[in-house]
Length: 85
Picture 1 (tube, helix red, strand yellow):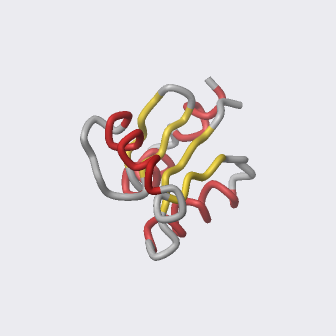
Picture 2 (cartoon, rainbow, N blue to C red; picture 1 turned 90 degrees about the vertical axis):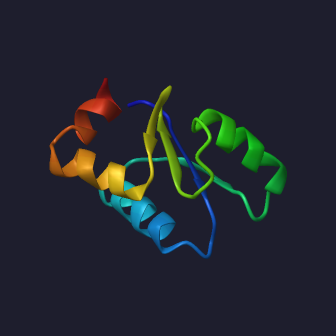
């Protein structure tokens, strides 16, 4: 399974929803809380092509986007393939 990294904030409902889906699927992920580690936010913005909102989710080297995009991949049946590829 590919590594999963998610940039989050504890105040973000979309972050909690994205993490909940990953946990339900048994996916281990590393989390970067941009409120606790504000110096990592520019890194997130650069990796996410200028996007500043959280969550920003990366599976391997693929930038998935945010919570909506993660759930859309799941609805389309593509998330498991992306995780396994």
